[in-house]
Image 1 (spheres, rainbow, N blue to C red):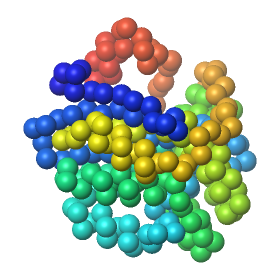
Image 2: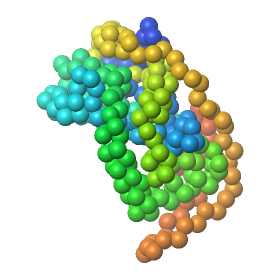
Image 3: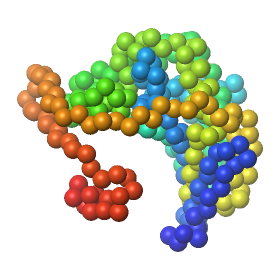
Length: 264
């Protein structure tokens, strides 16, 4: 794909946009990426980034959770989201003719969550089950334990899901405050790829995201210091899972591709 098919822009409110036109397909994928993840959480609110991601699918003033699912299904779309240590993503894949509705739905989700008390309590149970599942999945758990030791006493070493105690402690006021401070224009990057027109996408987003706040408080970005540790967790299993880790090349290092090949 030639660089000429890739275009970038900054919306009036500061949201960054990148599109890539692929005229040989009939689909479009749109993603709204939040440049905040679990490493940016207050230590007392571990797991809040992931919790808010879940809550954004529970309904808005104009769409219930059921209506969100029905609208996406009615156009054959696929919607999903995730939270990582440094960012969160919300994305929707549709046929090109449904791009306006896709943008409208995504913008509604990341702008207008309800955070009802009932939904919060229900979602706590869901996330507590996810935490238990990690404990029962040794090939996931070993990486959690490794990160905790490698980035000792740093936010990058904390579990994305949080802990049972930190999740149970979350309340509506805390969630709404985190959302208001974090889901702001300066923290959003939108990517769209497929059979699209850049100017059309930009116009849709300018309207759909016009009312979100422009800026929020700066996030904590302390550089981690790698710790040399040996972490051991004994469980009643038939296998042993071992992780060795060491600092590697920075993301923009000119030899990073050699590193990728070595990793493979």
